[in-house]
Length: 470
Image (cartoon, rainbow, N blue to C red; front, side, top):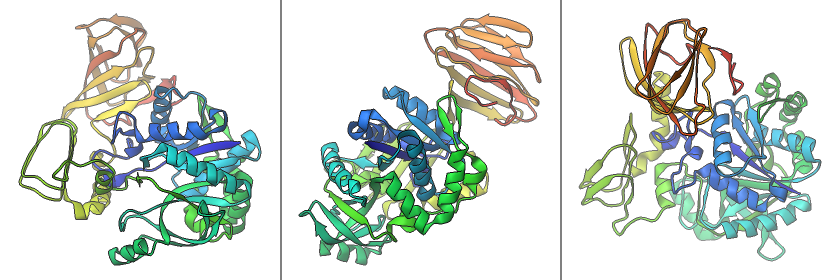
């Protein structure tokens, strides 16, 4: 039995300003109509036994994961919430233990949620080979045949061939090299890019992690012995899990085990770790440019330009990245795009919201977008999905004025129940319990005007909530 496990805990900070902490890269459609997560789920379900898939994500992203899976027609899935981001070794250990509880001994296919793979068929063939080795007790990783020297990836040196050229013993792992070393590695023909995708039996992995990192195994075992369920989500014990050491599967297991095997995967691939890597995974025009959105250029070469909200015009530039969103613009030389992460760290250090969220924020009931704000006021546009409802709540420091733009609103205001149609409004005083529900068949759009001494999102006291957020 093959159970894919999708790891969706990353933040993708090098793809700022599109990727942000509360809406990271795996939830964006960076290369087409489907998001990176949805593309990964499609591949996973193709090889899964009976379509069974497990997803690990953090608390903040749980509704994004659930919604994107539902939009892809995936409803029966085990979504396990990580209380804390501790890298891949603890996450995979939890997945192995949880899969053992659900199915017994099975083979796991570990897939990051944010990878681009050009040929699904090549991936399926490699997964079949890897599954065969996994059934023999091997821990298998996929090695990407490099088509260029790349300093942003780790490398795997192949050792003794197994069954012809279908797989090799792993000789060693190498961290991200310098440019000169990367050239030598690629020219040698002995190295693959480390894809971060794995196949192994859950019992074999658990024996290895217990051998090499017994503390991680013990804490994860404690965490999964105390499981609870919230709506469609599986929660592990946060106290036990938070005591795990932070470690990657590469350091914790793969570089120590004697049973590591690498299976070649010969297809265009990217972990979309930066804007330049995303550009390399796409098809440039005759001048080497990749453009997205409303873009006009003159005398531009070898550049990536992305317009999310407005017209972007570029003239006379070369080797430049320009990314525009509704509240931030990134301009960078392609050779320096790895430094975007340091900018995000600086934004976080100064508590800038641009590192955390977009002006459009998704909620399980729909979304809201900040239209304007100033001293003592804020204006938002709310969109409530059909059949959805915000929580019954109150605010200690702000009042709200709701104006219905489209749809029909069912409003609770204190002890009153109101029905508001387009161009009708109501006022919610400070410390008044209130609720907004869309009982119709079309989205409900409301303009919300907030006034008060404090307008932060944490000024919410919830009394009832359909999504378990009390």
